[in-house]
Length: 92
Image (cartoon, rainbow, N blue to C red; front, side, top):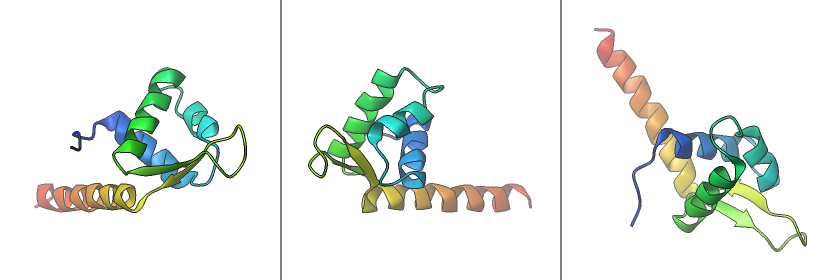
């Protein structure tokens, strides 16, 4: 069952998309102003379980690489489309 996305999850997804293929530790470090690194890492793991991101633990021993999954991309696109629609609706 998927949980409701909050702002932190959306920020994590956005960072994973922006830095797709980077090490998870670097993405977590880039978001350190949101929450503690351990909290962001736990949320990143939860997003993997829910199918929003892919975490590659096998390519290089001792390193985890993060990639945006199709579902994660869809969520980001839906939110962007929704924001654009609400901006158009509020300007009339």
